[in-house]
Length: 60
Image 1: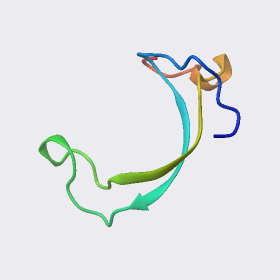
Image 2: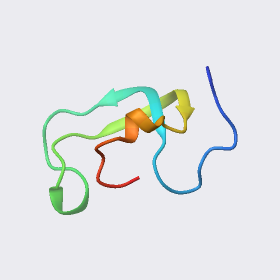
Image 3: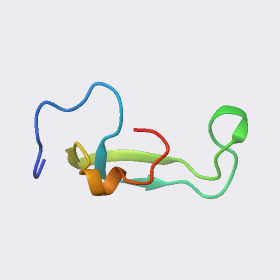
């Protein structure tokens, strides 16, 4: 994985770049709350997000 910074956080936010398969529109997740599902096959990048990337997020 390119740019992997260890240790990765146990809880909170993580920045991921993945390659995977996106489903067609439908009802996915708890009580059908999501329109699509992403099945990740390859994690290309995983790291802690920069302060600029988490700015404006409600939780992290």
